[in-house]
Length: 214
Image (cartoon, rainbow, N blue to C red; front, side, top):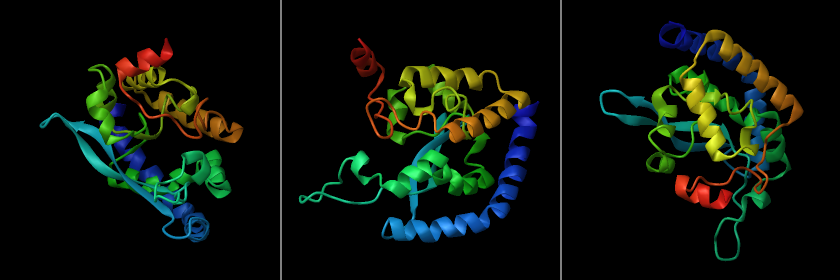
């Protein structure tokens, strides 16, 4: 009952209220971000959403966030590595999760939920196993079960396992626990980066993941 009817209603009401209350902060971050990033403060990228039962395909939407990496390039015009382009302002945005605030617009529109599996890259869709793709049976979330259990510090396999576990066990109190757990994780600055990357390594597919874990 909660997952089918009340979850979307609460998403809209809470995200709309948060957007109104946080609008002064959003305006300040827009201005500071434009200066720190020397241009557009927003990062917009296509991400896969919930699977449409009629087509069997994911809804592709444009995720909105604040940019945390600048566009510095080498002499050949190639973007520098993430750890170089992730400047101090960007690290602060990620540590506080303020880079996610513009995604409130995605929740209001219905692309996202407050809690759900995090929306990853469109190019990962054909790499999922049948079980892993069930993470798209529901709307993706601003935060999720995997985010309060390691965030970027856990493996892809564990992240997908937690996502599917959440999809199969959605409850109101479960979402409340995840929201409070997210606040704690943000305050502790837990799981911002993986062990080998400033952000998170790309998912290369299950066979490649198994090889790298041997």
